[in-house]
Length: 115
Length: 110
Image 1: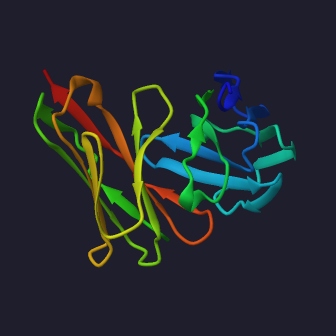
Image 2 (image 1 turned 90 degrees about the vertical axis):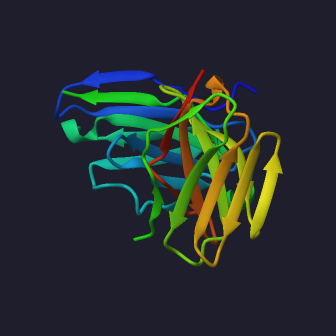
C-alpha cells in the first residue's frame, strides 16, 4: 500500500482565499483523522471520522473550517476564508480500528502558508 | 482541558548513552499511551505503545508507565545519531480521542 496520501504537499495562498486539503487513507482503514501542527501548540486533533461519519469535530477551531469524507477513500479539509494564523502543517492519519489499540498512520502533511 | 506535558528540550546526549524522555498527563481516565518519533520535516511514526503499569521493552526502546503518578517515559539505550528527532507522547482515553504533547527534541552527539 502507498500509505496515507495527502495533497498538495505545499500551499501558499493569500488571506481570504479558500483552501482545500485532500487526503486518501490507507485502504481498509475505517478511522480518519485530521491534525494541525504548529510550533506553539504542537499536534492538535481537528476532527475524526469513523466509516465516513464525522464523530468528533470539537477540535475544529471555528466555522471557517469544514471537513468532509464522501467515501472511504477520500476526505477534504476546507478553510474559507483563510487567515495568516491558519499557517501550519496539516496531517491526515488513518487507523484500521479503535485508536486505543491501533497505530495511527500519518500522511506526509500539507504545509500551508497564508500570507 | 486534557493536557499532555513534555519538556520541549532540547535534550542532548552523547552517542551510546541512555536518553530519557518524560511525559505527564492530566486525565486519570487515560488508558493507552504512545510514543511517536518525528524527524524534521516528516510525519510522526509510531515507536511503541503501552497500556499497563510497568515497563515494556522493544529493542533499544523501553516505555515505562506509572498510572498512579500519571507519568510515562521513554528510554533509548545506546543512543545513535539517527535517533535525533522530536519525540511525541500521545495519550488516549476511552473512545478515540487522542492528545499529543508538544514533543521533546533529542540530539545525539557523535
